[in-house]
Image (tube, rainbow, N blue to C red; front, top):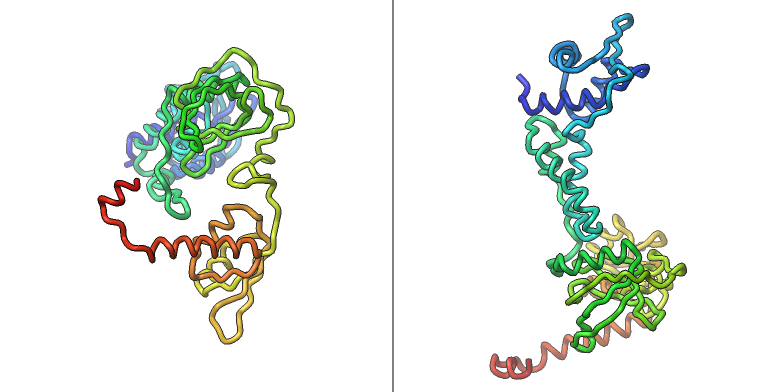
Length: 349
């Protein structure tokens, strides 16, 4: 016997798929749609659902002049919303909820909250639907060590998001990391970027035209003003991100990377290349391979090269080789100097 909750959601799914006359849907089509939602039901049970319980409670029309039977609601049947989502939509809401918290304005999240809640309750209520188990079987794991997200207070997030959404100026107190002090700023928001564990507001400061980044967790106080933002027709957020907006002093160019890589890194890059233009060639008398790749000249790629460590010997670009040698010497200096005692370390800190 089917679980009562599963049966309830199956009936709701059935009713959602039945159109108003003159349109209609056959029993076999209904069965296909239910199976697409992972409701395991045979044709006899489906026919019993339609002509039994549902036909008693809803004004269903059945055209028995042809087989399979055709089902519809009378054309003047009022439109009504069923208090349930179809199972794929419920699954999508449940998976999206954790990823949208810092990307959608609070007003939108507030509107979506009932849908998130409904999706969670519906998935918890189903027992025998395979799609429900998907939620317990998949996880998104970041590549590398994931830091805890920087905490952003609701009192900050709300006015910042409102200012960006409504194209209004933002007055804020911002902790400058470079100067270590709070600064009073009037900002014209232009965009927002969520990067790793930090979200950034992109905008211009009153009196200046260059775009700057403001980490949301360093905003100590924020007020959304009635004044509209300055005209910013030239701003394109994708162009900003890909042209040196983050971690790069200027526009990102492409360079030729040449290096020898260990078997483990060669295997990794054969499956997940650094870029579309990449080759790997076996080195003679060695299990290492020569890597040639066209890559962006950005900090992200340099950090990846540096993080590979002893599994990669870089030859080009020369500027990166020089920078890696400088970092190597600094690290070597840290580990060759005498170990600091606790008292001395605390005094230096």
